[in-house]
Amino acid sequence: MNKEGHSMGLRVIVGADEAGVDYKDRVLADLREDPRISEVIDIGVNLSDAPDAFTRPYPYVGITAGEMIRDGAADRAILFCGTGIGVAIAANKVEGIRATAAHDSFSVERSILSNDCQVLTMGQRVVGIELARRLAKEWIGYTFDPASASAGKVKVLTDFEAC
Image (cartoon, rainbow, N blue to C red; front, top):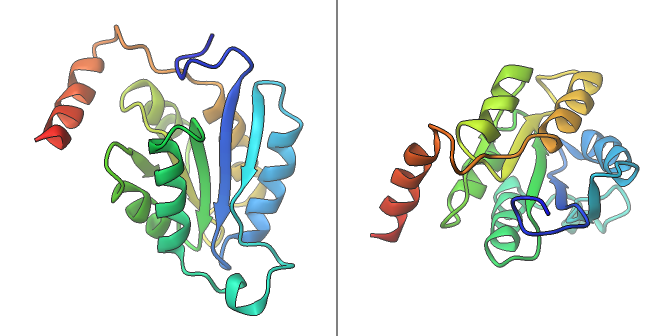
């Protein structure tokens, strides 16, 4: 059983605004083939969406993913926009969510091991597709250890939110 309490694997949301849809689609395909994942949830946008839905701004993507994780519908999310910054900010507005933009292996690793992030964001305009695919695969493999030295730091954040 993983830390999220699911013996079958992670339930992962994948989403993007129009500036990240190409990367979302590629990583989505990768995740659907990953045996560590029991469910991949595509929250859009998609190239086949109606024009008004296709231009759905990044805040909706980040907030939707954050709410789904908060409400127990998923364990983690990988989100894309132009830089990764907008969807990270949006997801972080949801209580209990820790989201980060990361574009290197060490930051991706530490986002889980040190910060127990549930949301990884990347920018289609600032990172190459092969690196984005690799980082998504790496991120899925990490599990936060609630007995680690970082657990107390994460608790400070969760305690602050409870105030």
